Image (tube, rainbow, N blue to C red):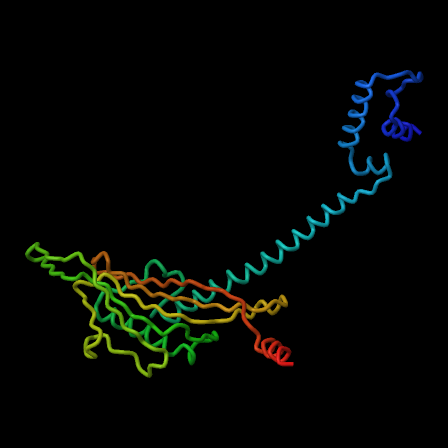
Length: 275
């Protein structure tokens, strides 16, 4: 009964609590009392509000539903993003094993070459493996872009004579590139015998090979999602900018992601349009 009487006093527009005499109340005191009741009701818990007025906590249920919905969306987004990150990292490691001669896990910062023959051998290895990707790789890859682009950057003029402590270098940088199409039956010669690309060892700053490979991440099918199509831009850099006798090797990848198109769905849409 005490709780009921407290509720009645809270919801009533009487003069106050515990007053047995009904007397005229000034308008200011009535407004103050009304404001006090409203504030007390505002700071009540949903259960107390339900006991006071019998009003169901619809807003509380709605907020809880929003929290559950947002939590589920975050979990699904996290799982999907985890698949994307793992797929990109796995492909990067696969590219390093495919295109870097003698690569071993954990040697990213230490792989380097020291002779002209090693540089020619590693470049030839990249070209050979690029042309053999469809036949040798365990992953399902397709060529993207126009093919492989082999470029060297070197000083416009360079004459270094350590024995005489003299040098004559033009700091202007020249770039020369060679295009290798995917269907080329044999990689071009890089030792100057072909006549179209000769490495400038004394003036060399770096050599890069750039190409694109396309792949599909079918892991998302397990989550009943349309797979993502990836275009990997791969760059292998042989860095000789220090001219220290040690040429560092680095492989970098950049992935462009887009939603794949199912041919069956496309055929059904086309048939529906024609009908």
